[in-house]
Amino acid sequence: MTQEKQTWSKRFEKALHPTIAKFNASISFDIELIEYDITGSVAHTKMLAKTGIISADEGEKLVKGLEQIRQEYREGKFHPDLDAEDVHFAVEKRLTEITGDIGKKLHTARSRNDQVGTDTRLYLRSEIQQIRALLRNFQSSLLGLAESNIETLIPGYTHLQRAQPLSLAHHLLAYFQKAERDWERLGDVYRRVNVSPLGCGALAGTTFPIDRHYTAELLKFEKPYANSLDGVSDRDFAIEFLCAASIIMVHLSRLAEEIILWSSEEFRFVTLTDSCATGSSIMPQKKNPDVPELVRGKTGRVFGHLQGMLVIMKGLPLTYNKDLQEDKEGLFDTIKTVKSCLEAMTILLNEGLEFNSDRLTEAVSEDFSNATDVADYLAARGVPFREAYNLVGKVVKTCISTDKLLKDLTLEEWQKLHPKFAADIYQAIAPEQVVSARNSYGGTGFEQVKKEIATAKHKLAI
Image (cartoon, rainbow, N blue to C red):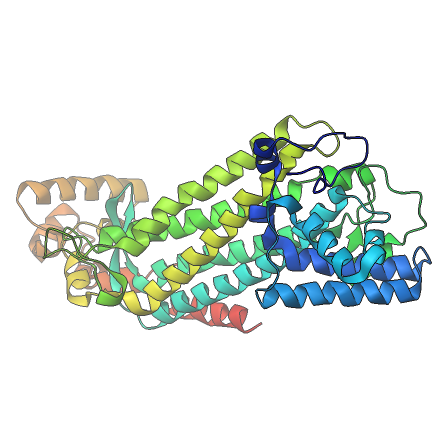
């Protein structure tokens, strides 16, 4: 970087060392913010003209120049290089080339500190809305799959041990509910992103008669920051977003793990279609669940960005510090990762899975997951539940030792165990009845699942 290219004041006699200039620069990644930087600068310019800090004619020329830069960037004609250092200087430099000395007035009553904070919030605000839309698509796919599998049964697990049979729809709708909280959580984060730091200056505001409420209104922020120190130093909104993104990835990763298990030869609950699976480079018989495996792997990447942001912020004194330049790459990568994972998992649900109904039917019929229903059967006939619980435990133990299932016991054997047992015990422990009978609110009973689907449809329609 030559002396002529340096962007700092006459306080400096020498330019930065080339390696330090490269180390210091952020243009390689904060170019992502260019359109938001231009949008923020347009609002700032209009405010400067409105308050008389610059003339109306100067304001019009600056806005026209900024929009020209926007168009040049969209057409691929504007390519800032390292000499610009960051996106803010790149835009201001090009604006000065277009408008002459008037372009040098753009930065009046503004610092890069409040400028970058504004750009980042405008960017994140837009991305949150896009991610919420992707969550709705993901939920819609879950809902469609659930609606076609209301009476498909699947083993339910606790501790990864067979627990009780479930409606497959009920299982899928659990992830719908998790995604609903993700959607709501991002809405909460959006409110705290939607606060304008523009006009906070470097840290203490400005001596110019600016109108921060006007720029907030132009940029559709809910309000401006009430404290200039807080405005330029706050990254709570970014931490909250990264936390919300991490929780989204937790939910995607949990579903991914289940799909990986279900597609294994040991489970065989689902078959992966060719469009969403890959093969082995050496074992021709294999079909690998790459999509859910990648989602599971990328989850740690998002967690890392959250941890990185927390570490950046934990020791920073007020107000702006260069450390905050490091808030962007992790944020950008998190957004791209979450969006790509949501898109991939939605496609996987829509096109990549074929549930093996015969295998699922077999699975819910070959275990003791109906044991609780035997205890409930006795309790409904006046036997204290704990007594019934202990009795059934002994029955299961006996069955295991004789290689039988509960359905294999004769009525005589049942009645020897307790006189309350009658011929209807077989119906009570049939997997379909076991599921259907759990008709409490939020339960897996078919009627409840249908109500849950209706409620879910209503949420998506709002």
